[in-house]
Image 1: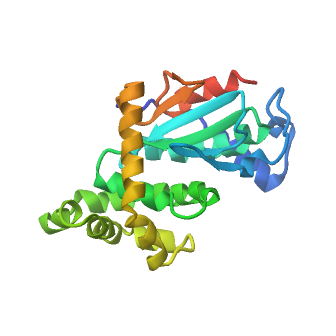
Image 2 (image 1 turned 90 degrees about the vertical axis):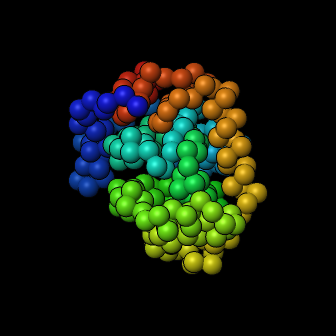
Length: 237
């Protein structure tokens, strides 16, 4: 993936300030925007991902991401909040997250994120991303015995071993999931196969070469981080 340029001041800082001290002139709604309905709380499960916002939005933003991708984690910390707080509520932008599966860890994290009702996805996604550096550091230090547990044996045993070794159970427990509830999702072979098959189909159809990759209106954008993505969203206003 291309090297990340230095970020400008993230737009979500302005949003956080508005929430903390009340709206001011500079924190006013984006020009030309009108909030029609509570789009910021509207989550829809799509055929290959999860969408937040107005399903009929003019700007349909799609992100293909991988949980083991450091660039994706960086984008989530710098851009997710701005998209969901400032753009999605207007009804002009929807934001869909889809998975590009790279390895067993990635697939396990995707199964955890998708566990439960559709409206839980974005909270689960954020919880896993916020701990990305910690669990990836653990993954990089994995022993041969751990790697063997992750790659050999039955599908349920492999997924449970990854979740246990990388702390996914603790992360999801803070989201309200018991170990047994998460196990139901982690050991769902049909769901895992569907996620992997959809990822492979999207890679082939769209010629995806890396993560994060952003699409709008079905077209790939020349953007791989928040600094280069934000202008595409601002054009809608």
